[in-house]
Image 1 (cartoon, rainbow, N blue to C red):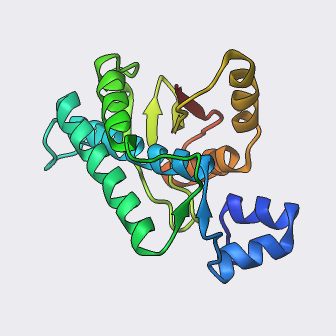
Image 2: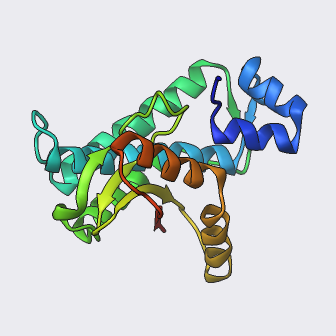
Length: 199
């Protein structure tokens, strides 16, 4: 049986036509707004932070300073913005992505300076569970139990919205899929997931 990603399942449940257009036909609106800017920023942030964690635990990867990881994050952000421009996407008038690479670089440097995860907790960075459908948590931790973790980067998030954002992820199909796939891949119980919410 083919296993689809949780995001496709959620999109189908909300609107089957939307899922068909986005995931099957590859349709996207030509005009980009704040959610798209946030998506680019989140991708850049994750690229830099995960490169830092990869350097801590994976053989063959260099351990990075916050500045070096920030440079990786900024490069990803610039490349993604250039790709969107080359594809013909346009930004809404009130959305300015020109300083995004600099903001993402600074955010990565600040995160690494205050890294909340002990190195002894790190098990894997972006493992791919192809036999369990598309499930690719950012990190696998052991503290002391096996726990998939995902990093979510928010450029702005006030206190009122913070609790709502945490609740959205607590019951998301994505995180439930991570728990199931991690247990199957490692062959041991996995009952929790972890949200690393970076503001």
